[in-house]
Image: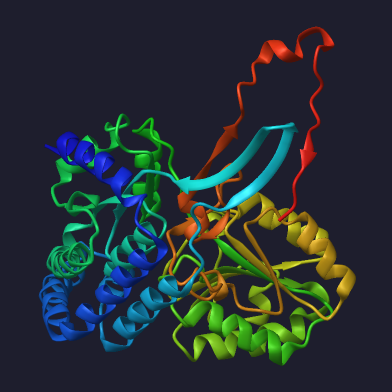
Length: 431
């Protein structure tokens, strides 16, 4: 059954690729309009999922962080609708000429962006992810197969029903979007390499690793979000405290929340008691190395496992370092290449940190929470990638296009250029 759905999606993707930018934008705005009109229906469906999930949390079968990601309220829905509208306003990423070369007189080569084809999305909780990804796929001309977690079953059905109906009302092929629901569908999707061009997992580390290990289809994503903030010896401490608080408590379940704080030994005595008090007063549990714990009352002793743990909770590990080199070495050893920040007023330290930290996002004097497609101006986010051979960091529309080489001639043959009979001009054409 899934193979048949994927096969139909592949055929639909070809028709979808022919929709004009205006047609795709009208469909997106119509989706946002319909979702807003049926807001109460969406929130009611989400409440059913939340009620069931609360029982799982209370029994210890679901983490509080997953429950937080599941919640859909008016504020989050407003953000989702704003994201759809922003995607509609963005430049169409397809049919753009990124290279034009005259190979010879009358022989022209173009590199033109085009949709990937069929994208399979497997995600946990996060009902907003369904909307973001569907919007990005529609704008970029890709068919999409969506598989959400069972914990968001009612919300996903309601969201997809509205999105699918609104899109088809505006000319989007019916088979260009499909919602998969059973656990068996996941394995079938991962084996549909004849029809699915890209898999994007959004969820726990174990989910991402499972997908990466069980498919031959290219996978775009990240397994962990172990983000660091390094407080340099030349930093404004009041600014540093505010940034650390934001990065930890704004949304601790997010993959861009800070998990480890590194502090230069020259300022540890002054900085650590102040930041610890601010964090602990907001319910953050601190786990300190032997050097930092002497400045932090009520902290737990950190163990080796803490440096490589994504807590997704109000927990923060702290370590004192003697140099920026030591901080960089720690980040590159234990980090997940997601997002890491330095708080410093020293321009040379910043340049060194940026050059040597091997992460998709490297920030100065800003919270790691800015690692987000919407905040980057992408409208929505396909996911965050820590790979280097795919799009890197928060991935928006550009992560959903590839390109074709388009060659036009007038009877040219390769034999014409054999043995110096005719020469290539290889003239680049601008504009």
